[in-house]
Length: 153
Image (cartoon, rainbow, N blue to C red):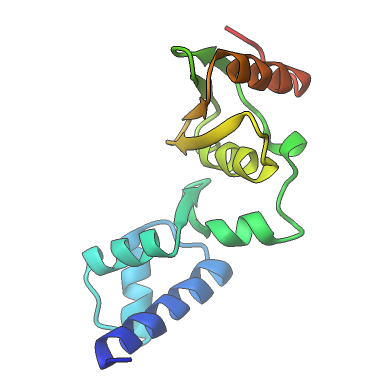
């Protein structure tokens, strides 16, 4: 492994540890923490590292996506589906609205619930898209969400 790759791996390990142990609210905050540990980094390297590590913002701070999905403390689908409403958007897409900063949590929960009707999810801050194979699967997802108290619009 070359020196640059080793440095990147060390930096990413430090990022994982920091995100897990310290509330980090911005890339600038993370950059400063890394610099205190002796890593010379730019904001763009921090951004790339966070993307490669699949970190995302939840409640205004960074969290590791894999940690949320694999820990016993990760909320169950029934605990975090606080969706305001669900709307069909064409034959194979649902649009779900959530309170601010909750869309990513709902998307992770749906992805890990492994419902066969769901092909994938894409989340923003308070809106997420759920892709299905067609209208029948779309209706099944809506029905499952309704069982969790999610209203249809």
